[in-house]
Image (cartoon, rainbow, N blue to C red):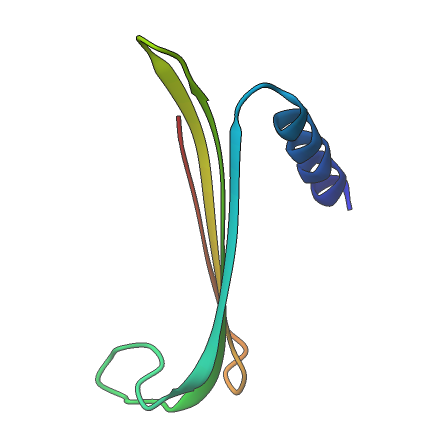
Amino acid sequence: MKIKILSLLILVLLSTSQAQLGVSVQTQSGYTDNSFSNYRSLPDYYTGLEANINNDWIYQKHGVRLYVNGDLGIFQKYNNRTTRMLKAD
């Protein structure tokens, strides 16, 4: 719950500043015949979510970009989850 509130607060602060805000969310789901890319070839259904948020402060001679990328993958049968968070600024 704290993460959701903090994320919402950051989003509000970034959107009220004089900068360009970008948000994108992608979802995908399907069936794969080799869930874990190994020799066992375990089939499973999966759901994936990827979210990107960036904020650009661009001026005539310089600029700054704050960029956060998160990734979540969930498998149905084997109940495994993969996550990745990348932040660059």
